[in-house]
Length: 203
Image (cartoon, rainbow, N blue to C red):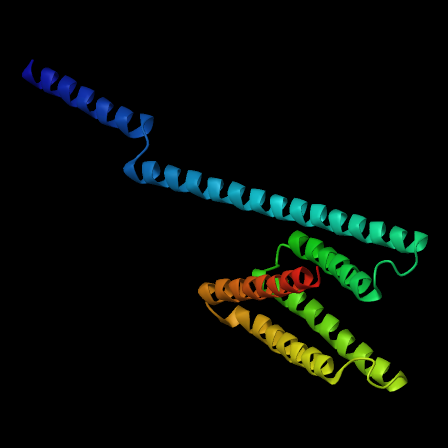
């Protein structure tokens, strides 16, 4: 009798242990599930980030193409209303915007490649500006002042160093990348302030 009761209790205990083991996840499984959920969320966030980057780059390209078309139409109606240097700058912006769409769609693209693309565009523009100034002075002496030629050449040197720096960012820390981008923004803001000051002075 006692042995039968002992076997019954042992059987119930074993059944409870097996039920608990198979019915509920282990501690390791419980820890693994949140980790898997976090990974899935991170993947969704990454995919959403990529989609938004592509959408933004395409929308910006559309805006720049529309801007170029507008000024081209203006010059067709009233030739040379928009100066060639301005048209060239807009055309370069459109070309760069197309590049950025391709970069955004490429899974292997890093921020460094985008920085390099922008720096290359700036260098091309600076080289073209120097070339045009020198060509103008060859045709008609002092068409472009010596001071302006010096400024354009200095701008070209800055563009060369900026491109070299952009190419080296892949070997630098993320903080260095952020500093580089901030430096570009500071330079753009300083240039805009100068132009605004010149426009106010003329008015």
